[in-house]
Length: 145
Image (cartoon, rainbow, N blue to C red; front, side, top):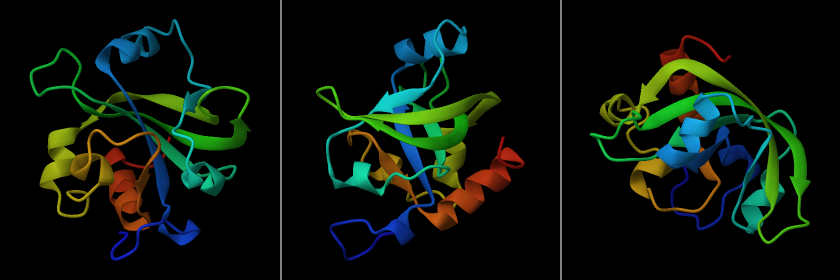
């Protein structure tokens, strides 16, 4: 976990976390849209993205929403970054999980309770998952898809 530093270094990145709202996710879940990339805030973090890094898609929302908030997709970055738009688009290859890894499970687990997305839920994409948090998420998923 990053402590005492304002900027991330490559060693701080276990995975990238991209957020979407439940409305966006419904289209993804129905298979009408494939996840080949996600828009990011134009910051130094985009420069830390390299091919093959683990990545997850986080669906936001309230506890009572129709879609369970949490991690719904997992995969890797492709390393492609399209900067020919207002916001850079980071290339992704993602797989829909059979079921969500719910926010409440991640919040209750001491290994993942300090995930950046839980501490700063309104933060711009991408959020970071530390190497230790990634190991815990991989264990909770029963392996990486």
